[in-house]
Length: 280
Length: 311
Image 1 (spheres, rainbow over the protein chains, first blue to last red):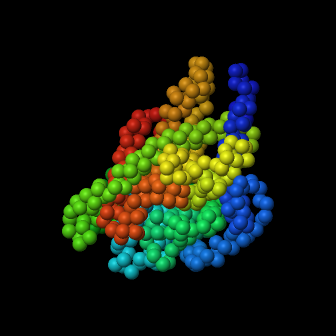
Image 2: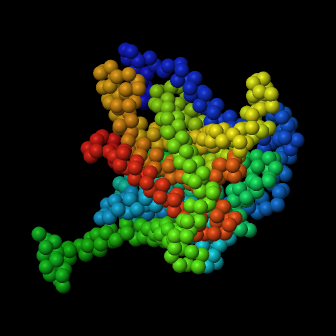
Image 3: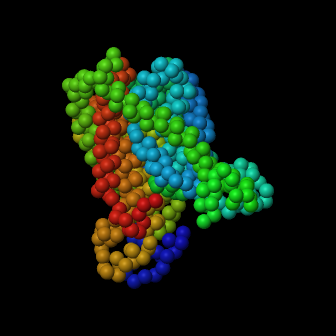
């Protein structure tokens, strides 16, 4: 806002905003949105239309036929339910473990804080593909192979560093003065956290929770490696790709996309601030 | 002074007597952060760091558990290994620069103060949270033989029956398709990271460059990019880690026509049921990630004292 005002201040030699900038912006917008429109059309047309050629770029026969075919395919609904369970399990686990850590990093100065931050940052840059292979081997002996708990554990390992970074940014945004005020008014440390910091941090924590859920919902390699019969939705779709009809694939792709779009819609206010924190 | 007294006579704590609760509080304060961090550190140690070591051990073991380099031998002589290594490196080498340039352009456009900035920002971040598998399927609907792109080509009379973008005979177009899907999916994240960095650059820098008559590209090259270094470093490291393990998008779009390291690790584990060779592939992936991260950290080092640097 203020940046815009500063920039639009008349200044010699600098035109306000070149029209070509708008052309580029609109072209990028089309590139970003067009594929989503097309997968929507593909998922909500009759099965015959999916195979027709040339295709229409607007829905001719709007129909839930293709979606129904996908949802009624063997294994899809249970897989979607498992994805939901695994995602919620990951969210609870990651927040339960990560929120205290985020709070500690935001509120306390202590020896070793830099080292711990560095370790957390480093673990974030380990490929989940690499760690899922030995864990799959271990899970066989621990009885966690092919269970939703097992997938949740690996997804938590993958998401936890990000959860910690975001929650610490969230608590950083809650003024410490308010908690101290609560302490002087007779609150215990825990009471001050519960009654002051937590309520104020809640929207940010909700965004962190959504992101954690989505990381889990999207993850496919570990989910495929760690399961056999109890597949999550992405794992189920990935395993059916070879030989599945296009109708199945398009509807499945649409199913995978929906939560991510809902997510962006819900957290659009936090996008820049919380993702800014992730970049530290 | 007073502290020395307390230390020299640990038996009788004289000084804090004035307020014994204060000393207890101080001690709690000192322990509290470690207690709060302990679960995270333990979890990461057990579920990330240890598995990383295990992955390497696994790669150097036989199925019976004895130490050997046989897995690497098998991997190296797998006829898909060299192509998959080459394809992965080609994809990394193309996707990352293209995506970086594209994201930087988006971030700069958002900085010009154009009308509807919020709207554009929202639209451009929509693919942010879409998975690689979903992105692959979305672009499959466009690039497949009877897909939307060929429909458009036929509608516009540019082609008779369309082009087989995904045929295994058209290697170049296979790469092109995967690159487009990856750039579409993950430019948003890089754009957000760079935007965050751009907002931290004082406007005076750009104005100073203007005063000295710098052209647009000189300004980008000499002012914007150097001050953006910390953000660029983070963006490139995160993006490269994702690019090295590229997998589902490739399978969704090309099946097995374009082997990459990630898909080979997957086939060795799931189809051939050999965790050791899969771990050997994983070790190569880990090696490339570490090497490229180290490279970024060296090349994009921020000299101490430069504004906009560090945390």
